[in-house]
Length: 271
DNA sequence: AAAAGCCCCTGGATGC
DNA sequence: TGCATCCAGGGGCTTT
Image 1: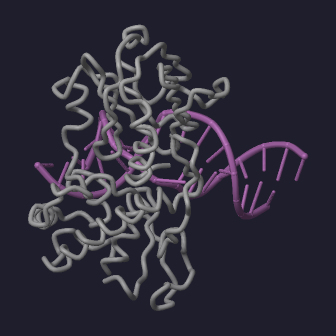
Image 2: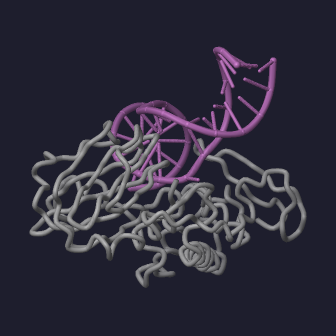
């Protein structure tokens, strides 16, 4: 379900509320993508200090030590409340705290909740170690982005999705950002001129930033952890619009496959 | 080293 | 109505 904006909006919807809560119990449902990595009892008594984010991972910093890495995968969503109903078949993780219960619902179970001892934990390194720049932070440096593109021959869409240069750009926003930048998704990353790479850099920030402001939009069924529904204001320019007229030039939008994923683009606006 | 495929899993939409 | 097929927001792992 979630790309960076949805993960960030989810984070903001419960980060304050869970801060400094003490863990009372942990309930596990069906297995997620990876095992928790510790016994549920081991978490009892710890405090949730802060909720951060790296790419599409949420990081629940624990006191006095350790961290929970939370990923929503393709279909995951969170709720945080003190009056949750009994868990349903797709509720696979409950973190019961003094401030409420954080519940992970994930029908497809591509999501994960993983306990690590700290940033140097091998599991943390494996999952977070190769992640690229944060697109909405100052760390997203244009020069580094341009240099990174120059050394990759793969299609630009694939490079964005891979997350090793820049994180958080998922399948929907990749198509949207490339449209905004006027760049064809199949184009080799290394073939982008510096000005066009700069345009893409701006487009990524624009698309993701606006989506965060709108409360996680575009996605069909998104709602944040406090139950607020996504707004849907951000209408897609190309994603999911195969055959429909481009909103700029009216040329029919094309759909292609890249790496088993759908890509949409305007054959006239994007070169 | 980088790139391309392969999976993990369930549910909803579509087609016969 | 029932059943088969395809597709879906991710990304780690294995193979080229």
